Image (cartoon, rainbow, N blue to C red; front, side):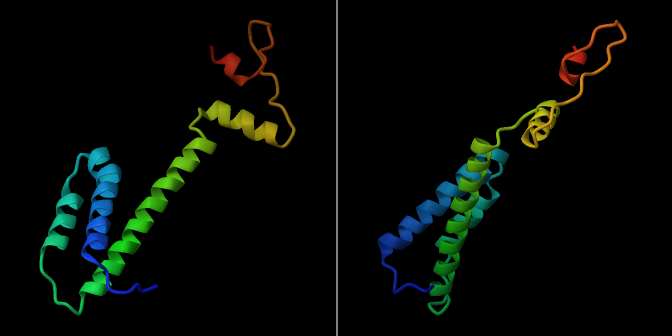
Length: 119
């Protein structure tokens, strides 16, 4: 999907969007500014006029991918929050309509589930 000639504000907006996403996803998490420096260098280095439209299209695709990837991770975390192994097993068993068996306790008591036995 090629777009017509891009204006300077559109390219500037693209550049700022890329910097923002790289900073959110890579630089802050890993404390590694490599990709931030690389991105700045790519936009500031002059390139032949024939390669500029394809470079801008690649940058747009990279920005869209990074935004989509971040949104996907946020949705996964929202709908499937991190949980312990016991919790995951309980929910999986409950999903198919079963219950975990009661675990044997050597003291003569019967625990309600495997998590109660570990205490």
